[in-house]
Amino acid sequence: MIDIKISTVVAVVAILYDTDLVALNLALAELTGGESDYFDNELVVIDVGALDIEKPVDWTALFGLFCSYRLNPVAVRNASEALHGVIMAYGLSIDVVAKPRAEATATNPPAALTIVPAAPVVVQAAVPATPPASSASANTMIVDTPVRAGQRLYARGCDLVLTAAVNNGAEIIADGSIHVYAPMRGRALAGASGNAEARIFAASMEPELVSIAGVYRTFDEGFPKALMQRAVQVRLVGERIDLQALQLG
Image (cartoon, rainbow, N blue to C red; front, side):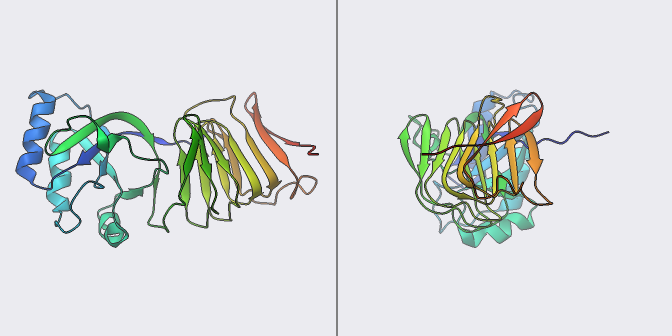
């Protein structure tokens, strides 16, 4: 017996401002205060967005340094596309968060790095860049461009609103509800942080998979014909995914 649910990964984020291993080691030593169990084998996403792109990175030594502080690297965030192959060769994933990064602008960050507290992240293989997004409010992310095959979009801590199509092979994720005012053909995961009240709405529903709070439903044999290309809402009823046609207009 096995029960598999769709979920995001929880990890700390290490934002690098330097690639010098001595400086990074000193910053980690200062952060942990010499306590060997400060980090308890936590997962870490390495954010390289603040680094000088011309500076080489000794990935083997960098990963080894984090492991020595009981931090286990699982992904790299904000890496240039040229680095994707190198990163994946080390067994790590490319992390994409489609939201402005507040972490890198923390007040008075250490000279070498900042460790951000645990946060849900999404990891993926190297794919085309995530569509640009804008926030209508602190609780809503709005995306006006199509989400193409291979792209993964995550609205952390808020609802996600899309005004363009979600294509086959694309994946959209939100901690809140998802609203798609266009064809929804990919994978949609709402309530990713456990919100069972979240819902998914689409003007034309043709999904590959839908999920609410980790409970999911796939459509390997096709989406129900009675609901195909119609306005539909998806909600969680008990432990069951419920699909319901919407009457618009």
